[in-house]
Image (cartoon, rainbow, N blue to C red; front, side):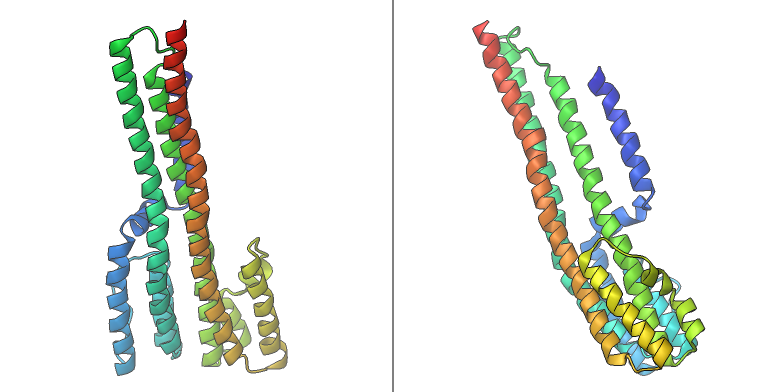
Length: 291
């Protein structure tokens, strides 16, 4: 009975957690990312051509994909409103999109392989339980339905944990990439200090420490560059280019690290929710034989 009560509890908790990170659109982004990233990459190619021809503008039906769409639209707005040169920024978007696709494929593969292996374990356990109850109906001390619920809860928890970790990472980098890019563009446009800091919303990044060591290092670099530009009027163009390149590299590395982290979580998950229930079922059957 406790298992039955635990299922809706896990579903409710998972719903609350994922609701806080706008789960619906982000799930679509992740599950269909291969197709959507390909379409968005073509859109970027068209945008680069339009920019060179001087006819670029914000489209009413730009495809929504991860944080890339918001960043893209912010770049176009900066170009059309302030005359910002977005050539490099569009190139960064396209190159990162290609690299990220490979890393996301690995992460998606870890998610699916873990679920498939638990489904296989459920099939084997339920088959074993069915055969065991047919042969020796009174020698199975643990109900197969209880194990089924336990494994189902495990699968649900695995999915919730996976998407929570993934979306939390994406949310952080979405804010960083958009605001750093906009700050760089506004500086190049020659806008005044207050308008640049206010429009790019870079102050939040400057004032908010992060637990990620790579991002914290970039934050200190950014603070130093902003100070040189704001207080001393120094040219930070080249330094900002290097910082943006490093930021995209950190984003890619974090996606790769996420895949490795999920691989470790998957191992623990399979040990608890796939291997352990199978061993418990087998031991239950043989202990029943000895009684």
